[in-house]
Amino acid sequence: MNRTVRDVYIVDAVRTPIGRYGGALASVRPDDLAAHVIRTLVSRSPHLDPARVDDIYLGNANGAGEDNRDVARMAALLAGLPVTVPGVTVNRLCGSGLEAVVQAARAIALGDASVTIAGGVESMSRAPWVLPKSDRPFPVGHQELYSTTLGWRMINPRMPAEWTIPLGESAELIARKHRISRETQDAYALSSHEKAARAWKDGLYDGENAPLPGVDLARDECVRDAGTPLTMAKLKPSFLAEGTITAGNSSPLNDGAAALLLADEAGLKELGREPLARVRATAVTAVQPHYFGLGPVEATLRALDRADVGFDDLTTVEINEAFAAQVLGCLAELPELDPAKVNPRGGALALGHPLGASGARIAGAVAHQLAAAGTGTGLATLCIGVGQGLALVLER
Image 1 (tube, one colour):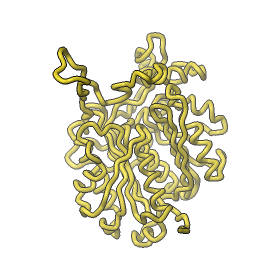
Image 2 (cartoon, rainbow, N blue to C red):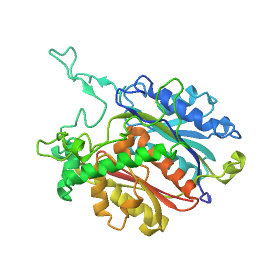
Image 3 (cartoon, one colour):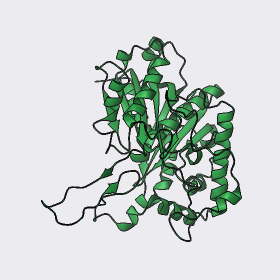
Image 4 (cartoon, helix red, strand yellow):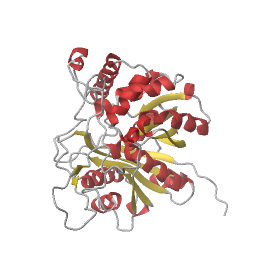
């Protein structure tokens, strides 16, 4: 069977303001967060018949709590979409939201869909504690609970110990490898907050912002309007006594959701809308698990090669900021990438990192930035726990 690969367009993208851990969104279930962005996205395209949505792809990194049993399908139903609209949840940890976009775009490119919704959701505040079942019945003694908020848990003893170190210790390895000082990391983190605060003040996020009704949160909750090197320097290392990684130069724990509307040419005509951007190429790669933060390096190189573009062709880049050291390490290994093009409206160090939603957020951010510029090529990429990298190239 011969099928022509179709062009795929990002028509629209929205996201919630990102809430801090235990903050303004902590009382909102993850399936309700996801339903909100889906409902908002559909409402912004008046000519879209919701029944025309072929599938919904949502990224989610937890799935152990209220986001269980396929949160994409649950969110579609809660959003009021017809029961005939299916939904699938994907998990590539921090890359889940971008993986959802990639899978949705692939379905359209292959002709399996014409209009799709892709996105991601995470409520780290509401991530549950889990109690594993005992290997034997009626165990005697205490049982251990595991937090599912972040990181390794219930580790397979066959896994090499260096692969399962805390994420922050992995960032320390990158800082050591590339000799990235504490001061350099702190300065980068402050810059992220400054850019984010300026972007919100200048209304640059207005086109994608979708606040929840009844929730007092109009912008990302973790953005600091004023910070100084002195306040950053007072923070103690979080993972190693003599380390450089602190709460100030690490992404926070967060709650939030994001969604994008994708379509082919026929879908675009039905929607009657000008797209934000076109999908050009994608790539996924893997690295040593304890150097997971460098995952974007090879993914970026491979995606740019597939798109047949170079670093000079890029007009905007979003690298998810898990840690300042992680982004700086990637920039050290991608010397042709101009740092001035990276995260121009701030990154996850300031905006927040709701795991399953972040990939969709940065894909939407690149699409909106390209639309605002009117032309250009953009890159969205993330590092992923357990050692992976994912990248998406868009053009306008």
